[in-house]
Image (cartoon, rainbow, N blue to C red; front, side, top):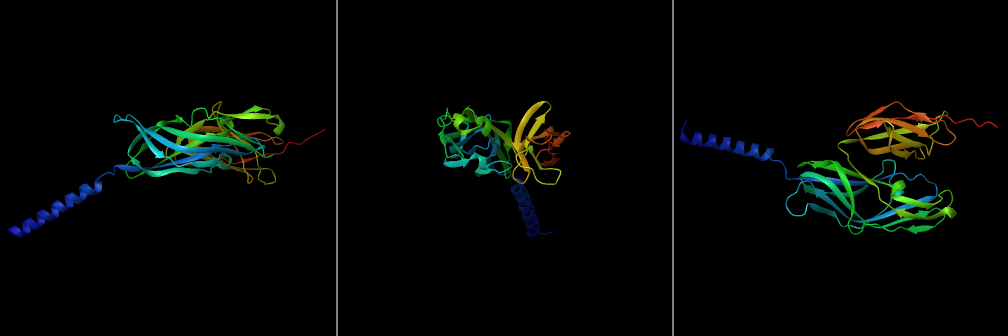
Length: 279
């Protein structure tokens, strides 16, 4: 083998080594997506539960370099939370972010209000969300990996966040609402979904069935079936759950335990029988 051949072979080996190192390099940034959804509000009187979000921040866990908070958005966004039920979400953020662990979101809410079906409107006082942000802890922390996408779901519970003053059985009994935001953060890569369909004995979909998801004896969350008899609960921690299906005029159905797996869908259907009314 002459000198030129040896140099050529060495050049090929070195170029292969360089390519291998380059292809194994992990990107410094991943992608973060943040979605907003609502745990349903159980009343026929309310047509809108509105919030305005004008800033979103996220905290990097154990960040020793200055402020650990990163601004994700300063766009003013308006939402009727009653549009975001049964698995419907709204996109808040979709952008590159430094790889690492994130354990807290700050959501700045500038306005909130309720509109009833009779046209009455109530503007709610924001306790601290406009100035200091509503703190939503992420547990376990959300891990963003280089070159991959992490998805975070923020679930605003309207029934607990918009607190009624008065009697909700009629518009005349409503004196107003207080805004006490209750928001849960769920990592969509480590949580699952519960979905299903509820029908009666005639195979007709049943709307307005309250679906209570229980972990042991504790109520984990609730939702309601839509006009097609369907329901969906997003961001459910992996584990075993019992579902209770209830509606006035129908027998209550309790299912056996259903198992929810991370990043997967668990389907639990039910058939409810109408209760016979006797004099």
